[in-house]
Image 1 (cartoon, rainbow over the protein chains, first blue to last red):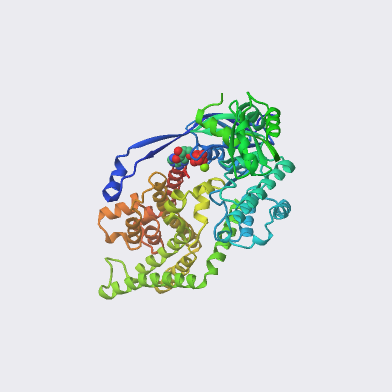
Image 2 (image 1 turned 90 degrees about the vertical axis):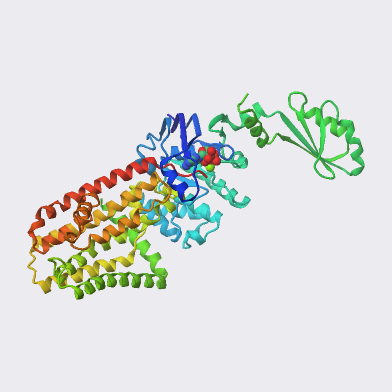
Length: 334
Length: 263
Ligand SMILES: Nc1ncnc2c1ncn2[C@@H]1O[C@H](COP(=O)(O)OP(=O)(O)O)[C@@H](O)[C@H]1O
Ligand SMILES: [Mg+2]
């Protein structure tokens, strides 16, 4: 199957100008402008297959939202090519929008003052959703996202988590093959995040919806997507499988162990050889990070249990935050 | 097309429901709108206690003109409410993103997402006043005149909307509030009196630059049987179509220039 999204050399520049204050400044603003060019997205290329769930990650200001805005037709690019579901988004916007669902975590797509269900009914009209499909999806989403109690509440009275669930349902009422999510879990508590992730997985599995989601919360990614794209300062630093990235780029493993009692503490020094360092987590909990190239987990564990009396012990891979941080610092993937 | 009418009905019903939920608020808005209308007529009345005629325009004729102008103006007021804070709400706050994500024209959404319900009062008042003046002056109106009446009302509302859409579209380029809307509103009110009372400069301005004259004055000359303006009267649909087209072009250019907001 051909890719559902193809992005080639996508570039988006913003020209902003310095604003002067006051009445005189405002007048000056009209005539003399000092421009500043921001390269929000800089020669980005990638393609996404139908049914994929891809995580688009990057720090604040990396260019995630701008990419989503170009892909959804809100912005036209400065350069490059985008084809999504057979459309050029910013040129065929009105037709294209029938085939996509979009959720912005920061801003609701629903009408602020009216009850959620009324917003849904307006969307039914706007997207010309047949009555039967509408009913069915509304039932399914109400069930999966537990919306029933909020349907008659105006959007402005909902909590962030409730609103996000309603926004998600709204974005999928017309059953789009493509779903774009910009920071869908921002500001949510753990339970709310979990619910949204479960829902996305379910939709991706049952409907085959292709999902592209941006986030700066890497736990979203670990739960949701096999594939990640890392963007920084408008450039793609990494595009590939999450597991592969870990295998290839993880430099450290860590062993966390819990001492039997405090009498063991003085003996810790005995294992600190050959570049192995013990870090204290709390009274009885310690952590050893070691270079994967130099030591094996088995060897480190052996040394720990031979030297110390431990109650329990845990081997962990390097957290992906750390790996990603290193990628940012280097500005490339070695 | 049918879908757009259905959608309009939905938008309207939806908005009316929200609006009427705050009854006191709506009643106050309704009475202030009424008061403004009465004040407008009051001004004409006072004027004619001082002078018997306004140039060669009789009291009844001026009342007819002023009443007629309320009809397109009322329709325009009903749908133009969203244009006032457009720059703040849609551009600076970035609500326009949402508008762009829907498979319906952006203009349609912006105009029909909010209605100034109380201005429907102006339409009704306008029709009543015009009806009263027709009887007082014993004007003979045929079927064709009624058709023209409907056409010119639509054209008038279209001209008002086109002019203000162009002014609104400016905010796609300049976010800073540019204070051009209030003076244009004054011009609009000038156009509700006989144009011939003004100097040539203003007459020209109101005909060919900001064509408010074509929204109210020239149409009424026809119903009042003033043949001197027949040519202008026939140009009403042309001017309305031309300005509507211009507004759509400017708007679409503005939309293409929209750059959303950084968050
Ligand atoms: N509408 C805009 N006008 C001007 N600059 C913008 C606009 N949108 C984004 N930017 C700038 O582009 C860069 C990327 O922004 P964005 O795509 O929002 O990043 P992210 O979503 O990854 O946090 C930032 O430097 C931001 O300030
Ligand atoms: Mg963002």
